[in-house]
Image 1 (cartoon, rainbow, N blue to C red):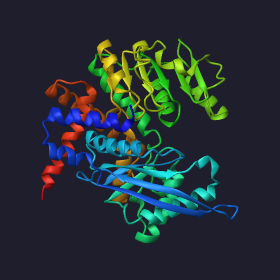
Image 2 (spheres, rainbow, N blue to C red):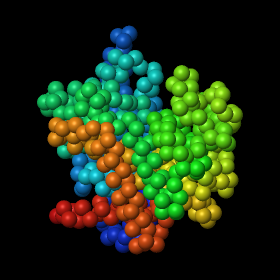
Image 3 (cartoon, helix red, strand yellow):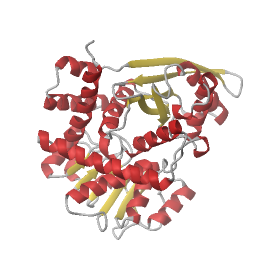
Image 4 (cartoon, rainbow, N blue to C red):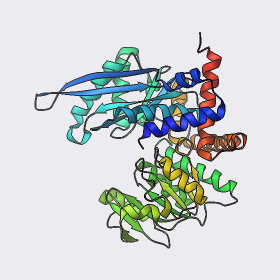
Amino acid sequence: MNALVATNRNFKLAARLLGLDSKLERSLLIPFREIKVECTIPKDDGSLASFVGFRVQHDNARGPMKGGIRYHPEVDPDEVNALAQLMTWKTAVANIPYGGAKGGIGCDPGELSVSELERLTRVFTQKIHDLIGIHTDVPAPDMGTGPQTMAWILDEYSKFHGYSPAVVTGKPTDLGGSLGRDAATGRGVLFATEALLNEHGKSISGQRFIIQGFGNVGSWAAQLIHESGGKIVAVSDISGAVKNSKGLDIPSLLNHVKEKRGVKGFHGGDPIDPTSILVEDCDILIPAALGGVINRENANDIKAKFIIEAANHPTDPEADEILSKKGVVILPDIYANSGGVTVSYFEWVQNIQGFLWDEEKVNNELRTYMTKGFKDVKEMCKTHNCDLRMGAFTLGVNRVARATVLRGWEA
């Protein structure tokens, strides 16, 4: 099932639980605006190349729209729509004053030189500069983009609108990026896991974890869980997978990954088939890579008691049903991985105030937001007698629906 179908399905179930008016329900699903632009640049060899840039702005009832910009060769419009919609519910669950957006350029960043990427980013910004803005739509990095991409967008946007550091988040700290932003999603996963385990009378210390995906989110989550006394028994990335039932030495693994660009060949554990990592024995499974990895084919074989969705949409609805029958507790992505967008909000706030926070303040505020978020989700679970995924969706959809009605959507 693709991401858009699954997201729409979750939205409709939440709307039904909330008893939303059918016209309001339809209005909440339709994106506010979809933008598609042609970006033509001269390549380093003098030839011209054309790319398609796009931005889906889903909803702005609760504040400016917020979401990543990805550079990827296969940009599926359905997936981008789903991710823009997911950002609307995610920012509402986190209770930060944003709506959802998503965008990018259909290109393979690995095939382009740094100067070509810079030209492409600047042309894209020229085409959309009057449709994004501090109080309109605030982009952030995603697949294939990073702090440098945000720096180029900021510079190009500022040529038209004056110096505006708050127009993008995930910037280099030298240009007003927030301290603690790099670790934010992984740290949010740690706080979310603590809140869930606390509810079940457990703590991170002594639990056995498996992490699928060892990019920014997976590696930070591993490091922070390890520091909190959790035992990480297996990890995987594109290069391969390693397992050590006594617990992997995470600091050594991080050094190995830095040197070798992957977990493959790490001597502190045994190599295993990366496709089997999800069904290895553990207490807590953290999928932190791609969507749709937990499906009806492998759901029956999963041994974890808790699944923390650090990736976007890692669990198919069919797998959801199988797992809930087995009594597996799933902490949904729209809450579990919202640490990144929450610290992006802190970055935006710091830029608007022109006042930088120290890292301790960023981390403490993040803990406050994640802890409160979990309480709010649990409240909805009690009210509507539903699981955590529906608790989070009803919470997000309800907040957006209330803002929409209060602003006078029928006028």
